[in-house]
Length: 164
Image (cartoon, rainbow, N blue to C red; front, side, top):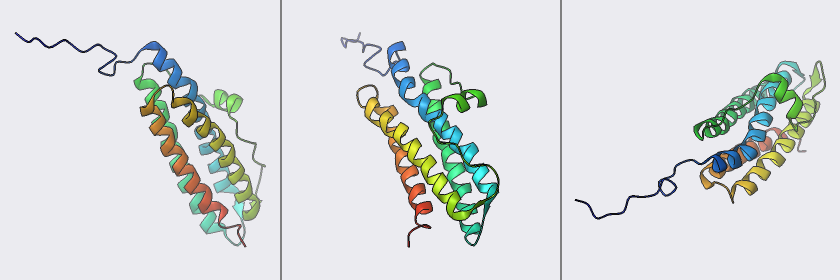
């Protein structure tokens, strides 16, 4: 017969409703902004024009793939903790913090500037999540640290085209 005391549910990493709600408070806005970046990135991808077309076109495809992965990782963390995620198009449109993109064809320089502004807005949301999750859940914080690192790199690759 074992004399060891069983570990509490909290000690072995069980999820509480408070933990799930705290994580969702910070990760749900990240999901929404990443989903908006996916849609807007594709819009920019299809409508970019000009001398640097192919390079920007391909970078935008990479950005879209990364943003979708970031959204998926963030959403799956919320769901794993027991809460649903609302990423329906109407919800994303109503709650995203990203600025609106111009409609129609755009010169590659305008496209890059607009997409960099989108990434910058998303980074505000992501950095708020990194800060807020520091007190809530370090595993969830690790996810958004990875999102921040990826967005910063994608931003750099796009912004570098504008540097003279």
